[in-house]
Image 1 (cartoon, rainbow, N blue to C red):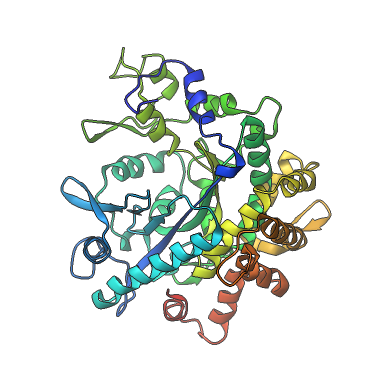
Image 2 (cartoon, rainbow, N blue to C red):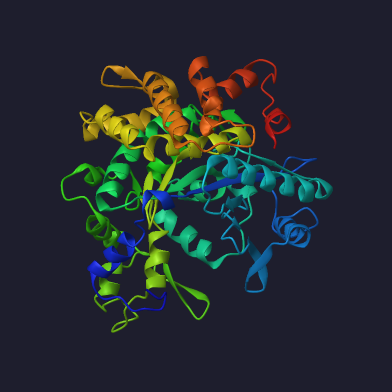
Length: 451
């Protein structure tokens, strides 16, 4: 299907999602992670222009490491490579690597390490540092400059109409996620249900954002808390995923009622915030009556939904805070070990089979606040996490993807097993440091945890 093809029926949208199905032998791993840049001397967030700015970072990476610059209105806003890898800007200047589609986790971690080495090589002479956290620990909204992308202008104007924390989500959060394949509609549904049910467990394991504007926020994952009041039309735990009839068509029906943000025409973004894609499909879009969406419009619209698990022609795991390099490798290891192994996928469904919609929602809220101490039914999140990590390690061993030293992929789970063994989240480790050796000086987080 060509990106310019005109679409008029929901079935066409569902068919396009279904076209992502691929045999297990072709399943790949795509990892994305975001990080905050800061000035090494003052620790202030980066601006776009200037010697030590975001633009200088992009241009430096392009000059030294053979990235191709993507511009908007003549300004650099992204970098790409022929293998599909890209570096993009989040609204507040957070730098995001969207990795290539890779066969195994050894390649994934190599990609992460190469990227961070390139970033350091360019950043250090510019007086820039980067840190992986779920929420900016010191900056106020007004301290962070908007990046020059028209899409973000539309979003930032709309966000305050539907929630109180949308601007925080855009400017002050960072995540790590992994994109995984499915073989069929049935396989997609199983993976969607299992990963959605277990997403709060990942949120707890990766909870790494306990500060807001220099003070403890009362949450271990402030990033996760932000998503609870960003935009209820396009976020959350999607309770209907667990109902009978779930499939590609059901996801399309939901997306048709997710309010639009925009369309692109002749290289420019047109603000359609709040309008209906369902009307667009019927030729009734206000201002574009008699016109119908293209596949490119549908692809853009899919990116405007932000549930805990998102469906495109693959599934995106979206529940984790950003963090240090070891956990950037651990997040894909966790989900590959669970979802790419049929027995583990069945085990995840079995573990969560009796959880009610209310319990799942409560768990999602509780882990943001108390992490591994949250409970569902008669089990703690720490207990469930321990079981899932054991399953995942077995699943990775069975994949038999070895590095040059003969090690399978299970070693990438070590960082998460340390979290469970310790019984405290990364956020709680930082809170303890804040209260003891940092003596309340939040600035020390940049020195201790920068990449």
